[in-house]
Length: 57
Image 1: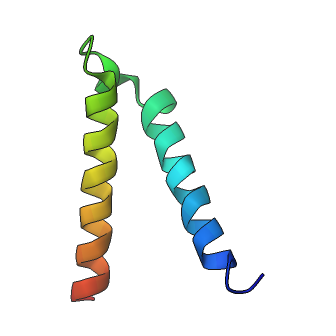
Image 2 (image 1 turned 180 degrees about the vertical axis):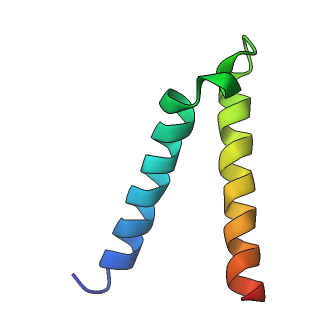
C-alpha cells in the first residue's frame, strides 16, 4: 500500500480540485457551451503552476 498511496492521494487531490472548479466557482461557468473548456484550462493552469513550483523550488 505504501507504493500506491502517493498516486491515490494525487488522484484524490485532482478530483477535489475538479469539484471545486466545476461546482463552487460559478463565475467561471458563465460562458454557455464552454464550461468543460474553462474547467480543463483551470486544471491545466494548476498543473503548470505545480510543476513550476516543484521544479524551481
